[in-house]
Amino acid sequence: MCEKIYRSVLVGCGTVADVHLTALCEGNYAKVTALCDILPEKAKAAMNKHGINCRIYENYEEMLDKERPDCVHICTPHYLHSKMAAEALSRGINVFLEKPAAANEEQLSELLSVEKKSAAKLCVCFQNRFNPSTLLAEKLLTEFGPPIQAFGSVRWKRDVPYYTQSGWRGKWSTEGGGVMINQAIHTLDLLLRFMGRPEYITATCSNHHLKGVIEVEDTCEAMIEFDGGRQGLFYATTAAVKDTQIELQLICKEHEIRIIGPRVYLDGDPLDVANYFGKEDRRVLVKECYGNSHITLIRSFYDALSKGEEMPVTLESAAEAVRVLLAAYRSHDERIKIH
Ligand SMILES: NC(=O)c1ccc[n+]([C@@H]2O[C@H](COP(=O)([O-])OP(=O)(O)OC[C@H]3O[C@@H](n4cnc5c(N)ncnc54)[C@H](O)[C@@H]3O)[C@@H](O)[C@H]2O)c1
Image (cartoon, rainbow, N blue to C red):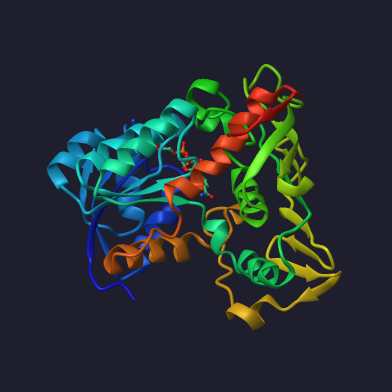
């Protein structure tokens, strides 16, 4: 339970901001004092939709300087994440940052160094870490030991309108990549958490279905090597005909765990996830593929701030998936060292 009402602002009033504002309006831990978007009509629409009475800005630095908030939610395109987060941290403002933490290595190391020097806190939005299915798999792994092989798969559909609707998508300079840095990063993050520190990667990335529309990859397959010959196999595409549930298969010495969307199977048998973690909030917030854990994570962020505890998703832990996917981009089918 959060012990304080924080003064919060949000920058980037697009698709995902709606989920953040739902969480902020439902929770009793924050009051939204301002919204910012370079298209002020989007900020106004968000304000009206959520019944918030707040100020509107077109420039986020002006918002940070004038509002002097406790926290900022950053929901802008990828290339702006690290710069906006660093500007907030250097003003002593806590940050709840949408994924990815950064769009390239330089941005990532700059943000890590600014964060180390700041007294303010930063949490990255890897909400799927808090899905009951993830928590159950983690609980089982504490009994079974680390998997000897993990397989992760994301097969979604992102067609031309998805890219034309928001022009930053599909371009190296603004999205920083395609399916790996945008959609599959969550599942990659989970695979890394289940497996531990990765050592090598061999990957191929290609654009199968939107040649001439996007510059970035729509499909990636990778083999990630871990200590002791343990293996992570990964496949991600946005060239599918429809979105299907993400899948993770974790093969341990004596057992096999499978996650398919919200469901968990142990050695082929379904487990009752609700038995372990209570009934899940199964509302669809904007899009089903976001999962249902934004609200849990945002609440935990404010909770951790109020108790002075470690962030529920630290920048250092979230950086690992960025390092691995950037290594996948460099690989071009060669085996390369990740760290
Ligand atoms: N955690 C998740 O599951 C999840 C889901 C969807 C999106 N995301 C992430 O959220 C971020 C936003 O994605 P989206 O789909 O909402 O994009 P979007 O294009 O719908 O929204 C981005 C908004 O940022 C605004 N913007 C751009 N430049 C700005 C600037 N300089 N200052 C202020 N506002 C600016 C745009 O006008 C737009 O309203 C991305 O990083 C994306 O990867 C995360």
